[in-house]
Length: 384
Image (cartoon, rainbow, N blue to C red; front, side, top):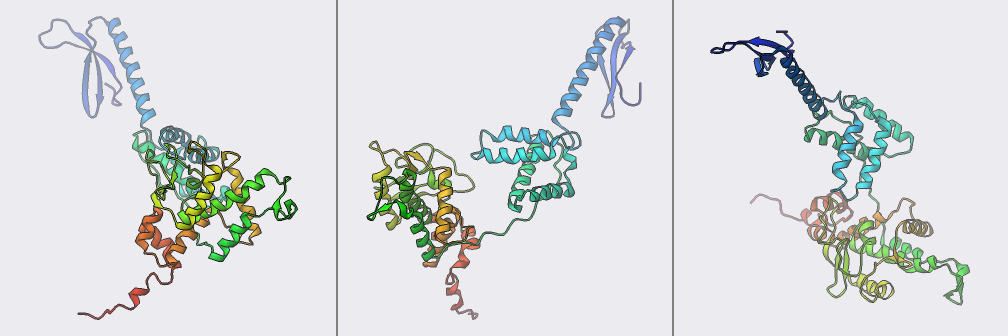
């Protein structure tokens, strides 16, 4: 028998048998194995032997396709398998798909074994050449890391190489003062002077400008008072539904997520008490956008929810208010939490009110309140 373990045909006569039978003999795991062909005819035995070899080859190919070392499987295969698994369960799947497309365009059929520190840094350099930030590059390489580890978890890859990523960028420390916020609200209601006649908007005013005068200030103040993300605010409706959040004016509660939808890592509040000043504004908005059956979105234009037009209008309001061009709707979230802390609210109460962890409030926002640790300075620290 060959030393490499190649199967062979052998004619063996068992004890108590008068005539020998053909057997398939091979060595595996340091042990000898015999499989009977159940025939004494050489030609029939060779047919069975050919079937055994074909089945063994198919089995080896199947094992190789499902359990491969990093030098035998491509990055594209990892990304495709990861996307197929993520599509039905990930809310913002389109973001992952965009990152995967970018990674595939760069790496393609490159093997997983090529994912070294230098190749990852080369990818980062190529993305920086296209004016991508380190935060975006870190997210893209994080998707690649998740795809490779998914293959290991599924048993389709023996091990995952370490994937280098840029350092986490510093947290944005940008928020507005109360005077800046007021200036932004005034700028959001702005309509060019040529459309004003005797203190009223003329009939020649574009419909979009007329509606912007109320939906953009509403968005700004709703995001500020609720301290929720832009997407959650834009999806709010007037009545309870299965797809997004809603507002209950009678109970004075804001539900930024439906109870039929599972919470994600970016948690949304459920049952947040509505601030008094915001409640008055919402009651006014209900007269404009709430339909007779109680349906409708809080923030809409022309009977449809706002999408890309809000971003353009917001940038225009920031420019007219004379604020930093880097101010975004997310800055309103930071502003709302910062003002709560500066007003003397407890860190734990603020975390519960806005739906964030106490650790995030302490690390990102608490230092904006100069008095949040003031009570510790007056403690008597003498031993008792």
